[in-house]
Length: 274
Image 1 (cartoon, rainbow, N blue to C red):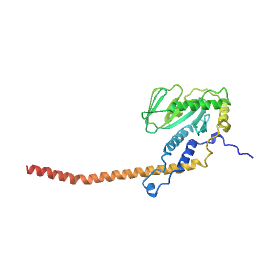
Image 2: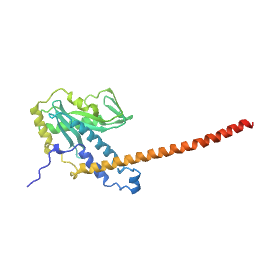
Image 3: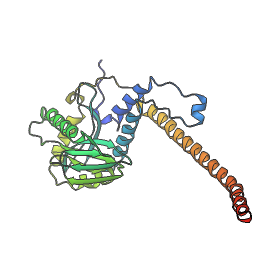
Image 4: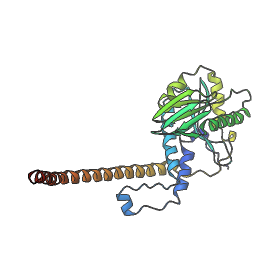
């Protein structure tokens, strides 16, 4: 009796990123008692970017989950030999979309044609998104030769600003807050029968390359526990900083009156005794 591989639709948002994050965390030393008390992050240096990426993909996944029922959402689909994956594939009346989620919380994003810069630093998001869409299109056309090409989308999570001087030719760059509205505004290209066929192909594990790493047991449960530790550490660190600021302010308040009195004595003494 053979075990049937789970469908791709069973994947959770950020699942691949979370599995890599947990692998990175395996080599991270445990925090000391004082580290926990003073809010030292449990994340290792190599885990921070994976954690941010996971938070971004989860946020976008929650937005996609609010789409109408005729839309289908797939997460964390393997496409490469080195563990590369597609963050999200979205299909609906408006087309086939590959979403590349980027968590640039608090950073300025500037776009002009094929150039995309984050806080003044040029990044390869546009090229990477095109490559992912092309790869998905090739894989799906092996089963559906006449399928329209996938539309690449960069979904930006909570950027400080988004300035688009010139839109890229192929890639849509969209804030997370406007993603749902943007998808629903696409003109219809698929009927219900086509969407059913396409969803079946995407859902079939045989359509996709075998994942490089075996699946991790209960990754979402482990991530929830780690996320709680990270948020608690951030809260404690913030409280200690506020306590430090409060103590400094109180010390300054207590120090100022004697200092002013001393200066006045010097000044008045100087006036009385020229």
